[in-house]
Length: 251
Image (cartoon, rainbow, N blue to C red):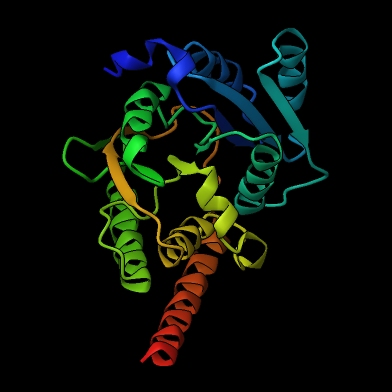
């Protein structure tokens, strides 16, 4: 897979952004796997003051490896704002692509080379659990239902036909991010994933999906709370309202 990426000179310069909160047991393994890929990848960990010492581990790794970067934040500021911080860092340093992924090892770095191949003809590549070839492992029935409903609502809100609109495993083209109104995004948590797709589509993005195997975290605690679910519902409603308003103005 992705044999042409064996030569990293021709691969896009990519920053993998990893938001972390209490990921001490996962972050070192994940960073090592990312840096071992046959791709031109650097890693930025955005840590929200993890009490388990996640940032200390990353700081030690970064002292030995210049491709590792660390941003420590003063508290739990949310997944969405962590992605925005990563985007800002990448754009200021002329990365060509930004990869977002979970730091709990549920997103396998082994899929990234194939995603980078598809990136040649796209502005966003979604690591998709639900397109042909994708699947999930260790999902409870409740988690499957929640994911199904969330994706149905996201597709309805955005008008997009992608199969996995809520996946956080993505590649974004830097040129696209520069065209998007990132400072105007309203959501802060997981729902920003859907808002980003909506704004990317409005900016004329070419969006494709690439199959992944998603493995539910084997250790640590899920970061999805009831509050996150409520925020997502609020975000979906806001997107639908904006989409209808835009349609009326263009009619």
